[in-house]
Amino acid sequence: MRKPKTQAMATPLDHAETIRQLALYACQDSSNSFDTVHWYFMQLANLFSAIKALDPDKYSNASMLAELGEHLSNDWAGFVDCSKGVLKTQVEDIKAVTLASEVQP
Image 1 (cartoon, rainbow, N blue to C red):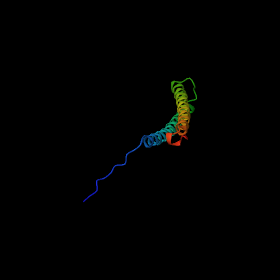
Image 2: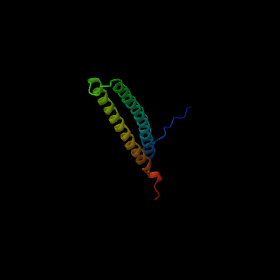
Image 3: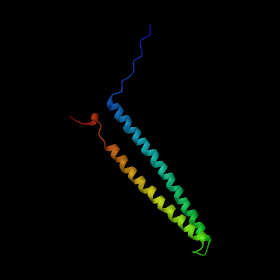
Image 4: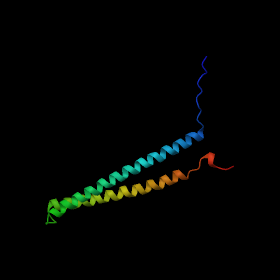
């Protein structure tokens, strides 16, 4: 005769810790994505800089468009870098949250 299987019941504290860990994993994945996007914007800025350097006439359409592309790429790279800084702050806030199991009565 077989014994019936018992399921482990998760307590709300277990759920809270699981949610906290999942949030930290999501933030880490986002941080890695920010690093990748930042790198691509910097490479794009370098490409526009090289195009601009090929044209000695700084008032030509190609040169002005390359300068605009370089400026926008650098601007977006800065935005991504700031967003990553905000994410790091949020990660520290998540880590600082005390669970009920950690609170002393």
